[in-house]
Length: 119
View (cartoon, one colour):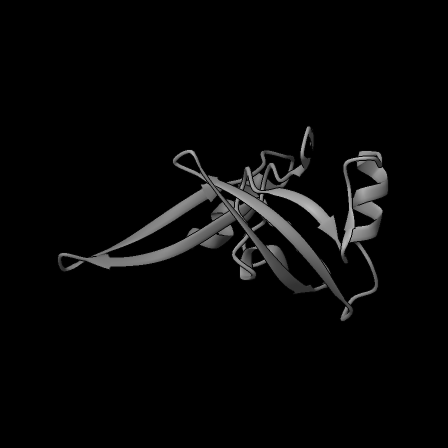
């Protein structure tokens, strides 16, 4: 999403290169490979972030945390994105084994994917 300072990250896919680099929702991308994004369209910025798998892109990020701005740069190796609609994670606590389930997107296959993951 366009933001007055750059490009605001709305969602970070689990296990994506962005997640592995520590990016979070509401972070603002202000530069891509050292060039600002304010004067370009959303699609122009997205196209510059995307690229061939295995290549790197450097992003300059503004993160607002409790009213304090932090500016940092991350280098991300591009990879094929996998957007699974159902995520599960096992948690052991207090002698109990729990299954944490996140449904990221509801579609025609969500029911069968969920059944497969909890079987």
